[in-house]
Length: 224
Image (cartoon, rainbow, N blue to C red; front, side, top):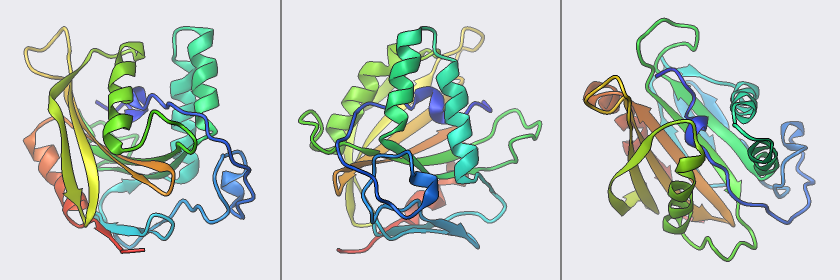
């Protein structure tokens, strides 16, 4: 389960604003001037654009922005058809990687590697998405385009994370070689400032889920 969660990050929407952001890493992204990637340092991630922060275990491997983008590029090339690859490339323009934390280094030989990926997608002007619930339903509808056999677990649920309303979509990844799921992914999404803010937690069992839980429980959103 070393795959990056980008396998299921089926990015959706084309935004419509010009980019004059001072961060050179965002020069090809469709984001406003004040948008930021945020900073992960000494066990704390903070982001002033979305006004939130959380704590993570300092033993985790934290991917750089460049590593996250490269991983998504690799995923783009894995799509089966030229049309899918073009759509995926287009979607990258409106989606920015914010955080990628893994329990083990990417080159380790652990059988699984629980992780959390945080991304933001510009949804300005899209009438289909007014809430995290809307966004997750579209994500779910795109699962058949992925290379993996994914199924929803339960229903999409509204939840509160650090004072902010999110929606959660739980999923299991099927395997022809196992009676149980080969892994789990929990998606959380909120619409903030014309962006879908997405948290994706990937894990194999309860122990790995418990390792990631402090990230979620420590999240705090400031009132704007």
